[in-house]
Image (cartoon, rainbow, N blue to C red; front, side):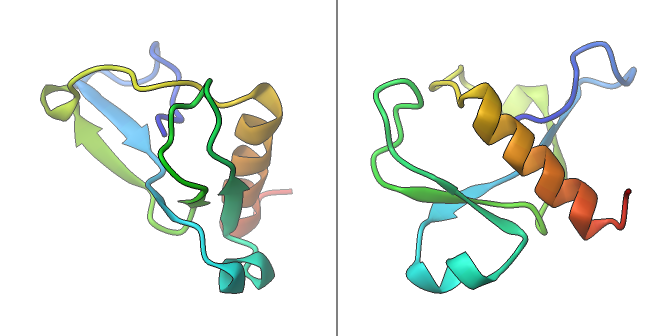
Amino acid sequence: MVVNEDEVGRLPLRIIVPLTEWQSSFAALSWFVFVPATAENRLAKNSAADTFHIKSMSLDRFRGKLGALTDEQTDEIASAIANGVGAP
């Protein structure tokens, strides 16, 4: 999932939070955010946003937009990132 604003940064990079297959053990870990598969996000299976593995990625590696998360899911992921870095 791309989490940065397009206007931020000068380099052709995006900040991403990777998604991985959901496992029930993730529910107890604050840095994983459950993302159910829906028609809107076009995920093949229930997934987890792993906010502890944030990285930047070149735009050259993107092939296109697969789908979109809800505003609530985006807010939950942003909160998990903030919590992980100790932001108020």
